[in-house]
Amino acid sequence: MLANTDAAFALEFKGVFYLQFVVVAVTIRITDAKRRRRIGFAPAGIPCDVKPSPNANANLRYEISGKNMFFQVIVWPQNETSGGNTMRIRLMQALAVLAFLSVTGAANVAAQQQAAPPPPPPSKFKLMSSAYAEGSMIPTQYSCADPNAASPALSWTNPPNNTASFAVIFHDTDAAPMKGTMDVTHWIFWNVPATSASIAAGVKPDSSPDGIIQGVNIRKVNGYQPPCPPPGATPHHYIFEIYALDTKLDLAAGSPRADLLKAMDGHVIGKATYVGTFGR
Image 1 (cartoon, one colour):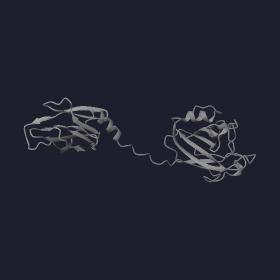
Image 2: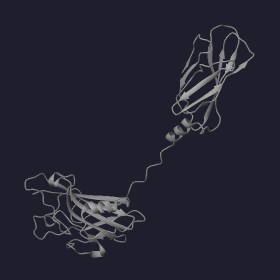
Image 3: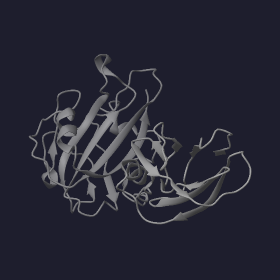
Image 4: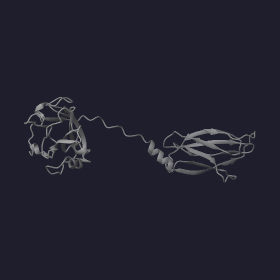
């Protein structure tokens, strides 16, 4: 906004220039009984204040200040007069001229206003199981209700390019053993070859089909622990998570879930999940 005032050469300017990455050359005509003066060059994209310098003289200086920047401009006197004793301030011209990134504040604003990169396309990486439908009840033969419970078959499609291996975690999200933040780990394994697209049902503890490595579950067994929520409880949610990694993991068999997560950190290029429920 431009504010008029009767005080000679008193000028206040508060506003925002919305042109990005350029400097706006602004000519302001200030007229009194004897002089016309002009100022120019206010930075683009920065809220700023323009006011007379307290050390005004024949070549009156105005101070332009804003966040992270401060500079002064010269006001050149001219030999043109006009009538009237009341000072009139009029914005005459605003022209986009050149990049002014040497002004610290302008550089900061330009970086902040730079357009964000477009979001990545939706992932098509998908995890499936022929044992039960997504979100449905897990059949008894895969639970602790069956003394011969076996792990269900898993398959996946459309993993990310450059996948070097897969890792899988199967856990109960509705439990918190020993009041901890980690829920119940039912099965973990890793170093599934990038060329694989499935895991057969019935993987035995401590076995290594296709070269996979199994870690320790809640029962301290290197293998599958079937779902087994407390009797009478609301059915728990059991989630399979498959991670596409850009490397094979140097992690020993029998390692716990915390070590697996640490080893995967910084190498996950894709993830898919599959949920089932179980109650008894």
